[in-house]
Length: 326
Image (tube, rainbow, N blue to C red):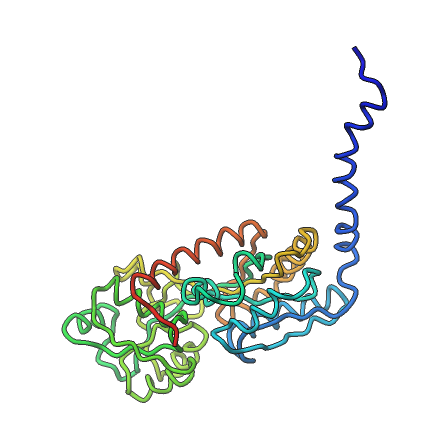
């Protein structure tokens, strides 16, 4: 028996309504952006996250024919800038540069005024970089094995750029996996910690790669290992931590893009596609690698899975090692 025509039409109405509901969002994505876009970097100018954000912003600016303005909102262990974007309208005009620090903050600051996983959604992971175990060029430790042997015999002093930062996490993981004794000395940033290392005041740093690279190149620091799965092209003679017997000491600091959770999926997809296209440009790839990064291309879903895994991994370390904020 055939259904009456009006019954058939009624059955289509919910489907048509759903389709029509997508039209405004789709149209907005096709037109986006029609004005300046703010790219919030929750760190000071000149740092790793800022450098990568400016690389991406320049390319998006060229593609979109609209200003993409990097807005440095440092402070609160990267929470001030993150909260600003989390509470911004979900229209695509506020982007947030996120890093490993934000994944750690989920556990480190349980009472934060925003939720990384509820108030923000991932757009992409755009770059990663290893950490590097470095000592003073005049240090008696020529290899990671020698440093570990010393750490088993006595307590070493290890610096970092502050509690909960990637260098601090690297130091804690190094101490845990190598079963050595390291007294953590937090500094107000990477530069003062490296200055003291070069001055002989501390024994080691598990440093962000680009921060210590110039000092390794100049001969002021000695690199014992990188924490990536493969050797870094800028330091091909430096072994990985896995090569020297510490496969669990594999860490990548990374940076990505998030937007307010209410941002339409079509706009998220557009920003993702355009950022990925920028990273694929040969000149861009060359520049990023020379800065110490490895370009990363992901879908929004892949970025979310990666962020969630990082939150879980480092949350466990924070709890196990009883890491507290400054």
